[in-house]
Image (cartoon, rainbow, N blue to C red; front, side, top):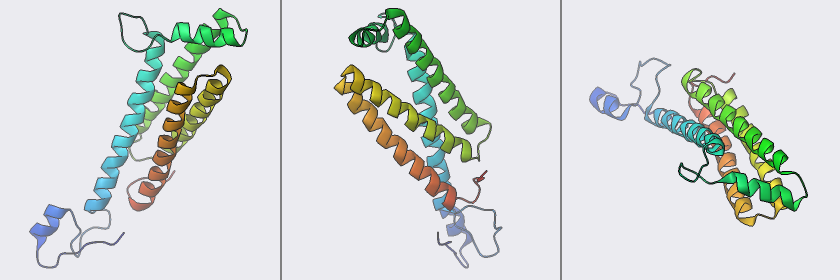
Length: 176
């Protein structure tokens, strides 16, 4: 990315966030800071998504929030002649895995603010999760859920590619 230089007009340079001649090599220009902020927004989105989606599996009572998934999962498993108790165990396990994934995104966001490796691993796990959900949707014959999971898979791929691009363009992001 080309560095903008404002000779003789430091106020304009400061206002636009561009580097002036003689500025330190560690400073980010306006575009790089914008990309870095976008990265934080992206990771925040996936953090909130996975945490709330996981919690929704446990607080899915009609008077609370979210979709009642217990009955849906029991019906899905009944189509494959599997017992009700197995459906509920699988639903709880999925909920815990989603919460753990959300916490992993949160750790990358809060504690390891400048690391891209954890974000990329989390996005890869997210893509695998949506692949598994899509396979289950095909087996259970739920085309609406398949459409939703396919859409989220596309968003994960875009997020992954964006993370790779931002890590290349923003020198402050560690590549470990």
